[in-house]
Amino acid sequence: MYSYQQLFQFTQEVFLNMGCPPEDAQLATEVLLEADLRGVDSHGVARLSGYVRLWEAGRINVKPAIKIIHERPGTATVDGDGGLGLVVAPRAMDIAIAKAGNVGTGWVSVCNSNHFGIAGYHAMKALVHDMIGMAMTNASPLVAPTFSTQRMLGTNPIAVAVPANRQPPFVADLATAAAANGKLEILQRKNKKAPIGWIQTASGGRTSNPHELKDGGALLPLGSNKTMGSHKGYALSAVVDIFSAVLSGANYGPWVPPFVSFLPVAENLVGKGIGHFFGAMSVDAFRPAEDFKAHMDNWIETFRNADVVKGKKAVLIPGDPERIMTAKRLKAGIPLLEPVERDLESLGKKFGVQL
Image (tube, rainbow, N blue to C red; front, side, top):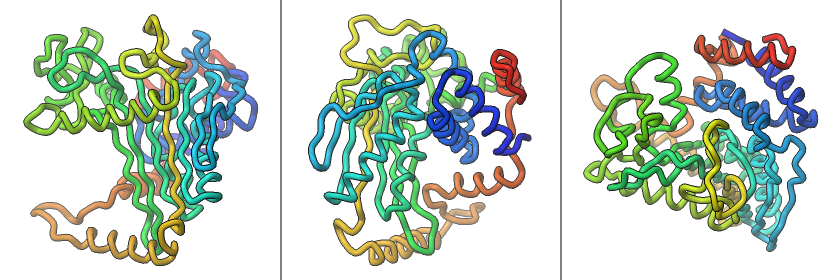
């Protein structure tokens, strides 16, 4: 177990050694560690070495000049200048929030960025402003559309955060694939099989091999197959891709640059970097915030009190498991798998930082 403070200090030092300005190193660390606190271990410090390798490969600019390249009162397009998505994304969300404060809603598309951590972090930034936050991003093409064997889409997550009053906020944060690639990486480290319905072979067959992607296989959309609704997961993923990249001028579909540094970037790129999309909606642009939050409390309490199936204690609200995990890990510490620990120790030796 490692305390949040231990991992924060270590991670921040790594980003500083990469050449990130202090403010950016702190922000990137905060975004990354939020994933570990919330139990999304696939997107936390386990990804740190991946960012380092992308930087070493010259694919991350640690001192980006993030700028607005197109703007209207309630919208903007931001060029991330190849920066860490962990830095570009929260800055873009801040722009969306500022616009929502001025005109009621703010929408920001982003091009020329990189992997931005968990979508939920960015959506939740809106909560303290009595705003509903939205965040989404496209990602490395690992997912095959329904009826295809070709990897065309990323796991393309969507997050929506909604404020309440007495109740904790509603926070939905989900991949549009049956499972995120990071979950396969965890299974690989644990030497365990994947559930049927997460991935398919290169020819489109069923498999439980978590290494299947290395042999030409693909992740499956949310729903896993047509009978179970994979066409809906495919459609949701496509919406994320279009909002994040076709709208912003980033790469989309099979042209999205891979997160892993050893895979080549596609030829004849159609845009710049990875794309994101953010939204902030001021509640009082629709109705008084206190009225809305009172009814959100009622909504949440009603669903919490719904009848449960035998063997289950209660109906959960989106965001509950992550909130409970955060409280637990802040108190007891954050566990790391042995391969992740070795990975961080290796980074520590590289940069002269003690884990």
